[in-house]
Length: 391
Image (cartoon, rainbow, N blue to C red):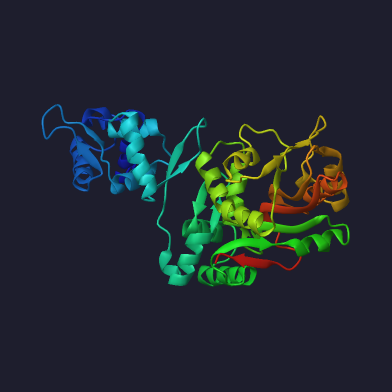
């Protein structure tokens, strides 16, 4: 026997597919009597889920109300929706719909997935169990944690942590897991709140022994933390390199890099910048965007990459020797000018082979006396790290 929930499913499907409707539009599809349908509709109007287009008479039709409760109701029966479907359900234009949806996204009621030109969809954001966490845990997780779901949703803060904890960690003791996350952060960041740079120079000695050409290697953040996976900033880089054009997200990455870049340039008297070129061709290149947006006034040396018919990414090579050879064969440095201190900038440091081999070429050609390196993220696995905090 069909229930009221079946009728609510019918109402939701009708709103999404056809928009505003009259009782007669769903009467033939419902197992309920006309009076039963009226009863359902009465409660939905009373609860600000549906809105009537007229008070009474043959012109009475129903559309979705523009409220949080209405969205919660609709998403109980519909997994995801588009702007066009919301516009039909609300019986308003696309432009007005986009304004309302922006507010619902800003308020955390729904989550927007995708960026143009791809299809944009919206999903409902279930309330997270904030009560599980202490104030300190909640504040640190909200500020520092993020998780990208398999379908591409970028969940920030407590939402992301809860999703990871419930679907990936294999743990039931989420409160203890949250405290473990705080403890790991305290260990790796030395309890410094405002991180400006991570000095990872020691890592190069661990990997290359005496064959190190870089004076100093810095990261904005670690690529990943033990147990808890990729950091917030690393997740942002991953999305920015996925091939989608997300200018706002890439600008956020640039803003996080700006303070560190300015500090290095001033501290080490940098007189030239070089950006490591990407291997994979993408519609929007993160490094190209960074090179345009970072506020740096010194000279820039052009680095190019020669690739074969099948470009080989450094991260696909497991052995350090293979990575060194790949960098030796592909990175090309040319300059008629000589510089004292050159700063190389890259997105992610794996072994550091690309940076180190590029530095060796710059020094061997007499283009640079000393070479420094700065990347967005780097591994936390090897070496001793020094955290440089903002004053």
